[in-house]
Length: 204
Image (cartoon, rainbow, N blue to C red):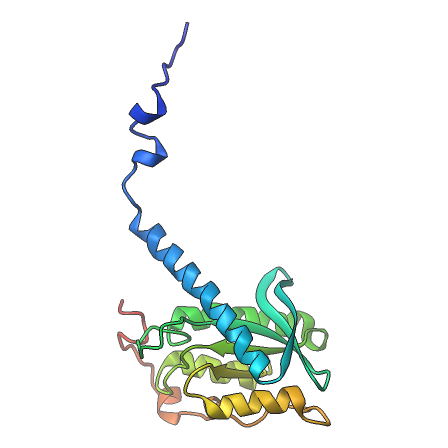
């Protein structure tokens, strides 16, 4: 005797194949696919600057990082890549989203506080750097000031960043400290005022 008859899968209204598409899942799948594509682009960018890929998809202190690279001078870096293969100047691309920067910032600070000198220098490679007036740019500056981030570069429109990478990977003797970069420059107006633009808050 069967207490709860089970209909064939094709007739079951709860059968996964009969459920309507989940737009959230589709969006997440697309973001994940774009992220993997950008990782490949970021790795190629680092190699063009003179780095050798030591390992990809690593975990440090339970946190995922995209790669460990090494320069011809022996200097090693951990790499976190965040971006999109789409080169359009979209307000939420790359590190322009505050929530994306906050998640990255927590990881960078955690690694710095927990491991400090035992963790290779951290590089952020992105498709789009935040505009100086956004709070995500302030977070980026604070990470640099706290020595939790060695440098941040964009794969497009950032020739100065590419040249900094070349020096990190090839200079002899190796760079003993991060080089000067535009993203480190303070924006006094932002530091004194709290912004709440739709661009900064993801349109919410």
